[in-house]
Each structure stands twice: as C-alpha cells, then as structure tokens.
Image (cartoon, rainbow, N blue to C red; front, side):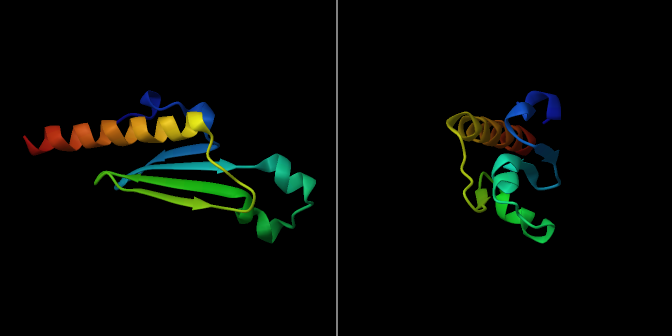
Length: 90
C-alpha cells in the first residue's frame, strides 16, 4: 500500500509501518483551549493502528473522538491491507 492511496488530510500524521498503517490525529484546538502543559499533550492524541492481520487498535486521548470520515477511511485501509495480504498468500 502506498501513502498516496490514503486520505491523509483526515489525520495529523499517517505512517506506513512494518505491521500496517498508523494514523495519528492531534486535537490542537482542545489542547490550546485547556492550556495543556507540554508534558500532557499526548492526552489530546488519537492513535489508530491498522494491522496487516486485520486488527484495529485504537488509543483515544482526552476529549478526542474518531469522526465518521476517519472511521470510514480506517475500514477502507484495513480492507485494502487484507486484500494485499490475500494476494501475497496466493
């Protein structure tokens, strides 16, 4: 899978890893509104790991959420990864 196949505008950072795809989304507005100290910024981070095995691991920080568009993109990427895995097995 290529990064160009992913709608990266829905997330702060998207990374292709050995195990699949990692999505990160940082809620800067909430962090600034709360005057969050530098050492607590990870509380405003949403991290999603889409594994080649088809598993999806979601870590949600303080007052963060996944939008419907983000969720749809996560599922679409998972389906592509699963399809690629099946093609490799053939």
